[in-house]
Amino acid sequence: MIALFSLALVFFASSLHVEAQEIESRIKVYAGRGDNITLPCKLEGQSNLFGNRIKWSKLEDDSSETDVLISMGLYKKAYGNFQNRVYLLETDDHDATLVITDLGVSDYGTYRCEIINGMTDKIQEVDLEVQGVVFPYSPRLGRYNLNFQNAEAACLEQDAVVASFEQLYGEWRNGLDWCNAGWLNDGTVQYPITKPREPCGGAKTSAGLRTYGLRNKNNGRYDVFCFTASLKGRFYYLIQPKKLNYEEAVNACKRDGAEIAKVGHIYAAWKLQGYDRCDAGWLADGSVRYPISRPRKNCSPNEAAVRFVGFPDKKQKLYGVYCFKAREVE
Image 1 (cartoon, rainbow, N blue to C red):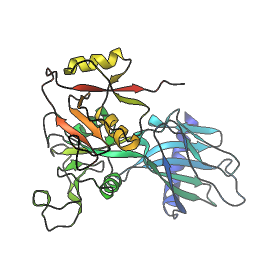
Image 2 (tube, rainbow, N blue to C red; image 1 turned 135 degrees about the vertical axis):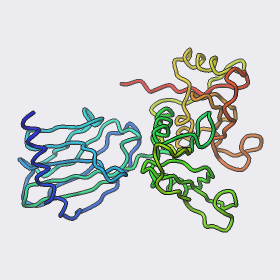
Image 3 (tube, helix red, strand yellow; image 1 turned 60 degrees about the vertical axis):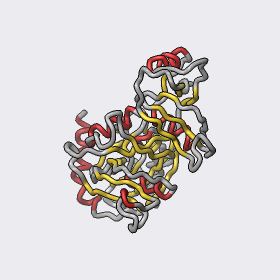
Image 4 (cartoon, rainbow, N blue to C red; image 1 turned 90 degrees about the vertical axis):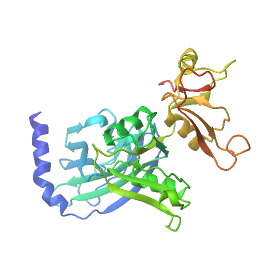
């Protein structure tokens, strides 16, 4: 404990020197959920890393940093939800490459590698992009009912996290058009418009992301844009002899060794796997939806989309059910 505390003090004492250094390079790494990935960082030249201080951190959207791993000689410590999931590759005496195992949706973002020895210090940043999909979400209560904390919880309940500006921007470039304003993870509220029109900022305005700017996280009430990644399991429509109410739908999935699917599951299956089914089915939040990747008459004639039926009375026996069976750990 004393050694680790001393190590933290050493980093603090060196922070002014490190901040004065320029970032030497920036790398982009793409990965999928569940992957084991490497974030490269190497010390060039004759020096080696033995006895040097190495710090990996994650840069958050509010300009704060989250510690990932600190190393000095034989002393190494991982932090938070990175514990037991990160380690240094150390292929040679110059290698500070970070390995992250079992990648999750919250792992995307920018990571900083700092190598500090007072002589040949190095800072390198790596952008980690997790392949996934952004989707708008509002609860059963209706639109504009979520403060920021509720929005975070709502996304987590749907196997997702609050999306970043970059993720929403990328989805807008791919054609996402949504007129309801939603939270992003930096505390701003925005919405993407590809077809300008009067109710959505004006017909004569340009296409793009409309923004309300930073909003009060406690008192502001909006929808939310969630981000989910590829599935670690199987999403499917459960064939049943008759339509089900909500409780029957939950139990039907359980009997099949699965759980009723979440909204994040249906979006991931639709966008990343091309899942297509014209049957409306219950999901875990009590909504009814169906995924269409091949637009056609009576399903979704004009666009590929996850169609939203609504939040019907849970006692109605009018729908099927979508289930999710998690992949078994090998």
